[in-house]
Image (cartoon, rainbow, N blue to C red; front, top):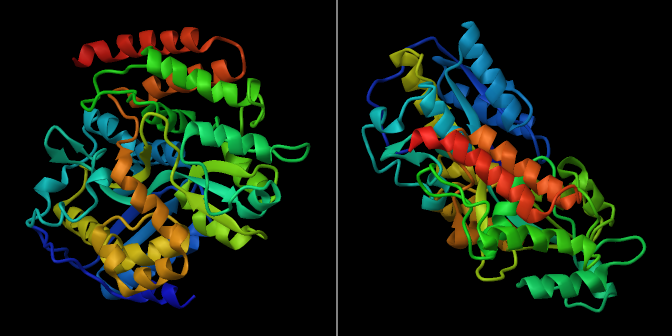
Length: 417
């Protein structure tokens, strides 16, 4: 595509760094490849462009599976002395990385604070903790609703009017469900807490506090949210019973097994390339309010690095998040451009005019909230994931499962208050 030519555009930001990179600096960057199309080739292309512009810096990109795999591999490398200078890891890993004293705040590395303010505030929310900026957004997303317009037409539904409320979601789902197709699939493996957070905020309740110290899993609105999710299969029959697999859901949608799916915008380009039918993309429906958590990864710079490596790492991050590169990245993958300036580039203006669904995730930032994150994030999150799956499979009631998750979170977080 002509828009991908911008992948080779050399772009640097106005922000300058405190210490210039010296010659022959080598960086190891851990990077998650979990969803979407040929992301490895896209990242390789960006890195090659950076190296062409900066021949004194060598970048070794290590692709390491999903976000959890990336965190494990990067931290193992640090612990074993293999060395790593930077990584793209979960935006929600920040609390744990700070607690382990593994990363540096960007405030101490940049000389122009304007650069830190150039990104969408909603995408910065998970990276700013106690007044310091620990993560810079790159591979970022919101959850969006993909839907099969051809199946909407066949069911007598307006293909240009996807559901905007929970009631409309149920009504459309019933019209779309038949012997071969479910009306809706919401994945409940992989990242069930993420989908659940979207539903909870739509029901008017956040599941954690902004300081990472409290969770609200046993709040009645949160319990009602899980009951609603389960009712989509047990009561309304528009979704499969039990769990829906994250990893295979995109293919199920492309094969017509479901008329609607909730998934990361990071799948957008892959769906666009793979769909043999007319499809649409919409913001998630509302109940009490509209909303989705943000998602995806941030850049982090590791603390156990030299001044030259820190400077080179920051230079790479500046390059990869520059408006031109962020625009090209968004076009190639479906992830968001991380700054308003990315959407002002000629490339992204032209692409979104031709393909308006590419704007949906960005537009949803107006109603987005920070992705679920607390101290002891992994363990607290696992408790919530287990509760969600226990309820959806019928092993426990929503109230019982969420009460257990809340009690576990209380024990884990008590020492941090």
